[in-house]
Image (cartoon, rainbow, N blue to C red; front, side, top):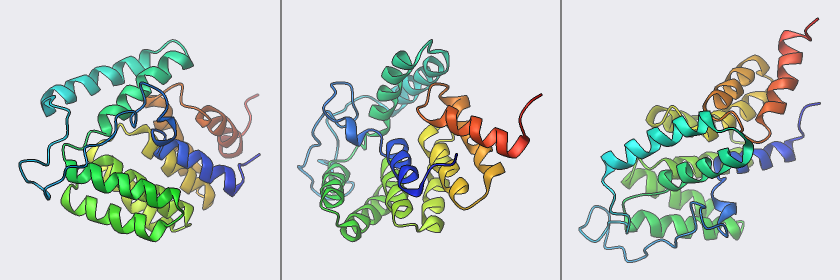
Length: 216
């Protein structure tokens, strides 16, 4: 049975903003409070506390994706997933961190118009920051603005084709608009990257039976 729209929205929230709700866990992406001492985009003080060179972070995330595919169970995969989210959340800019904090506060206050304005500013000043596109895509989805959500997902995948959250979100949108064959392809891509991703195996099973029929 297909998920209801409310469950779809919840699933996309978990997939695309999965790090936000896990802030209480030590290994979660939001566990460290952002540096709010911004001096404007690109300024010398606009560096996040994380001093790891970008090249080293890229090597780390490559290793983590290999570990994610090889994880023997859901618990192990979850730990690796959290570390990937943590790396994706490193913005390299105190200005970006401050705006992201304000955008999250706006979402928590149900002020999605303000949240979108703040996320628009982030993608303007820091277009390679995946999580700004990610959260904006989620807001557009919840508002049922699928065209803008899909456009943001394309921006994520152009920068990081391994973004399993974006593939899952793409699948949810395609499923919701009746593009079940393409949704199945997107979900399978997400599972190829993250074999233990929550909810997605069940979605693949359900869509496989609908699109391809039951096996004999």
